[in-house]
Image 1 (cartoon, helix red, strand yellow):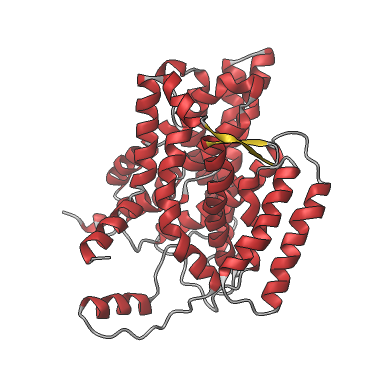
Image 2 (cartoon, helix red, strand yellow):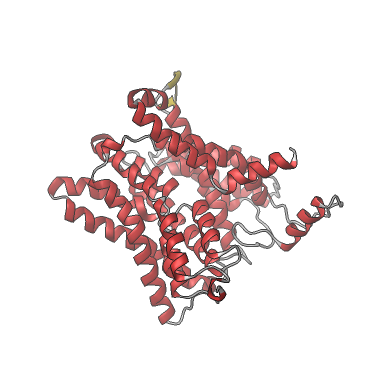
Length: 418
């Protein structure tokens, strides 16, 4: 790939352009011709079925493709808890982890409060089912906006990434436990997913040093188990990825080591590059799949964000308010309390940075869309479209954070600006 093409591809990935483009196209198409849009998304590929499921476009995207998206999320969580990772030892991550709890309880509290203010009776009970929608943060978008608001090397960026990874871990648990496809059949996990985990463990003990067998064999068993257990099969790799051999050291989420920077500089200058990286199977898993997953999110956005503006209801504003207000208030209060209890914020980060970081955490696009589709099904499906629109509107958190950041002068060097 030429340098210009590589640079353009990196730009598209860095700014999550495929996902954003898919969301916009899905919304536009659905509002021009909603019937045609749904015929396309629900189009069935032949008469074949897979474990009792019709092979529709939507099923292939949400139940198969998203396996790899959540697998990469699990990789970030796994590396963060390894020796040298951002959550190891846990003592240095106590404040961000407290913020994570606030970033879950805050949105859930705001969601349930707004639900009971705006709805009563059975309607309130139905809408309350979506309490899990605002609990997770879109890691990639939060990282992008944080660097724009704080500057690339500001400690608030690492703080926010720790928080986003941790609350995504909680979000994965919420999806599995709170939103099963039907009453769970736990024994199927024993028959299929547990053997998949044991197989992955055995491969690791035998020194299998490439990621593909873990995903192809152990991952398939895990996927079958979750699907048969009526839990969401997109989470299949969450149980397998921790067994893939990881690096001997970790450079931090989304960060490259100094050696990597030197290699890039040498390559740009046309000098031979000496490889200093620990290209572990876990690292290669993300490295090999990140590009197709990032571009594949175009199809996820297109298939899940197609909502008519006319379908908006109070649920839209409940989801949006929970993400923006709930995340900001919850994260700020819990981390502030942690600092007062003797668990300080990272050096160089103050409470104004914490406040803006809370706003950025309200970016819940990808996972919020996914959970909205799982929370409101069947007789609750009338709330799905409005909830998804609220998740899409959470993109306004980026604009709010940029404005708040300018006012509070949180970016590196702003304090010294004339």
